Image (cartoon, rainbow, N blue to C red; front, top):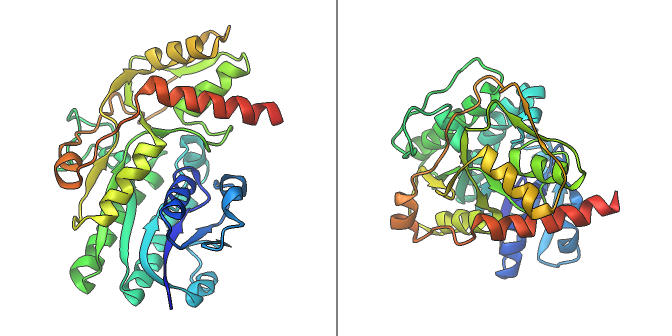
Length: 318
């Protein structure tokens, strides 16, 4: 039986781009998604491919995963988790359990198939960091009972579970810590900073900036992110390894750039900064460069141009 690649969260933002890249590389892909935040429209152009199978299922439901028994997997990518700040705050139990029960179920499958297993962790494991930029050795500054804790601690627990399966059962696990990522296929209702500001600018609405806007983020275009994730899977590394773009911008700079690039008449509207919102976020990607031979290629202007074009098209249809 031919071996397939499983992408959990395959209809999501990053997962859909990963699906397309692997199909273009001639791989056989099974995309699994419960469509809570993923969308079938993200993978519509793949549904006719003989090498692509979509299964609507939830990684937390072991019974529903029995639909995967027809396949043998050589590689499993676990990107099955919500990530939008509003969604993870409104659905903390789903967020925590998909990164614990869901991860365990997929690790069991990896053990059974003898498949390599990549866990998409997050820069949120660093919390509101006291080290800048953040290296993989930094253990973080996380509020374990805050409104974001289902995600932050979920990702930390997911990493711990991966390493437990690696040590106890010899599962070939790989952990990437994903930093802020943007690009086409983001949902127009996503409250992460780039999609939210682009949508508001195109609709002529005020651009919502938290606090004084002096907090910083580093933005990685989705094609760079997917290439980094694949490089990690194809490597002999266990990780964790940071994948992100180290170019750092204040949110004020980002908002002004988006207003300028969209030709919008929108103004910036400052609102109260959410609790536990990090003041700074920037990856140290020394390990990714050294161990994976990877670094981002797409600058912010180029990436925003593609993202804005995608949002214009989607919003026009609505």
